[in-house]
Length: 387
Image (cartoon, rainbow, N blue to C red; front, top):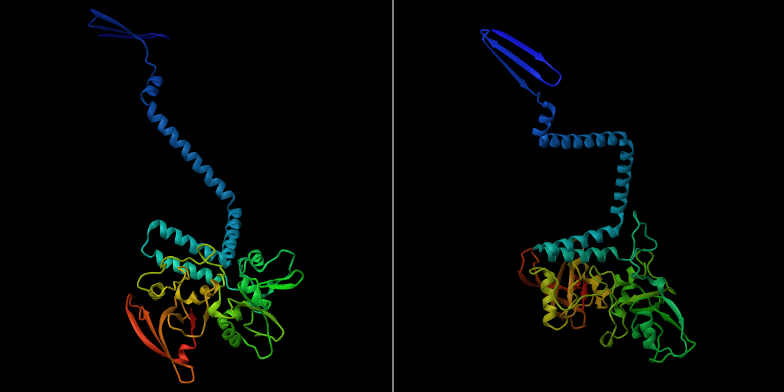
């Protein structure tokens, strides 16, 4: 057997002779292996290429992060500091409460009513004036709508001015201007100087012997309203000092004072027309009772412990004189507080309060449970009543 193989640049020739009698020559063109391999594995190569590219991006990112780790640490520290500053800002609490309300409404959570009442109370707390002589550990940002005694204005009546036009101009009631200046009629003459209260109420000059309690009884408001609005928590009231009696009236029976709206969580005014409180709770019960007697309360007074404060801001008389039909705020020391409904007031022969009968719901944390009880005079006179 003879085997001959010759290789040429373009042709490979194989000559095979078997037993010297048969000789066969076959010419075969070489295969382009690399091109054929590429065609067969084209998709696989593309996938591998994409994977390699992504890995390269990740590696570059890791290297950059490693190089800038020091700067990122500083940035993170600064971010933490900024976050702490934001937490100390009281307006953040209001924002957080408002966001919680929005989320609850969109998600239709069963706790939506509780969240709305809580947000109202948060807003009420954070919009209370800070006393000028108090020291606070963190500054409190007050809404521009919140006024103090220092916002009393002096105005000289011009030709064409009327009591009604001045009330519209300064955003208070005609009665507030009239009472603040001891006007005997609704006529104002050009050239006279008037004191304009910053809110519905009375500008008053403190006289010898006056105190917050006596003025509260005189003008049908609560002592706390006078003290808080005039920064009198520490020094009290001084004879000759000009103060403001917010919500005060000369004759409560004939008062037509327009509500003073400020600091409400939802909108800038008290909202009427429905019961905005959680069914089964004390606030819901009292709101229903007031609707039944034709004296509805705003739907956005918040939790029970802020009812007296918000009601006063809405121009509703708040004091410590119990009357049938009033809402009595009996729990203010802690959240969410408690309110009850005054059913009847019993008097002594000398006209002083002997005892007060109230009805209330959820007093023992049992929803929808209604009970009645009688408070003795000394206890009853220690609470605020929303009339």
